[in-house]
Image (tube, rainbow, N blue to C red):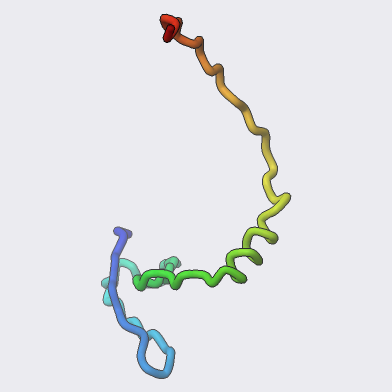
Length: 79
């Protein structure tokens, strides 16, 4: 099955209704539907930002690696 992208609008009662004619060859097949909002996300208030930062603290599960930094270039003295 090919990927199909459909833009639709949620009705005033908060319900999204989809009708996708896929054809008889796709009958009785499983499908996956992903819903993504196309509107831009709202800006967080400073208190919401602080809550998000607090929730993220300590959640990293990995290692940090600092790559080699190279050599300093040799410069002539200024005086």
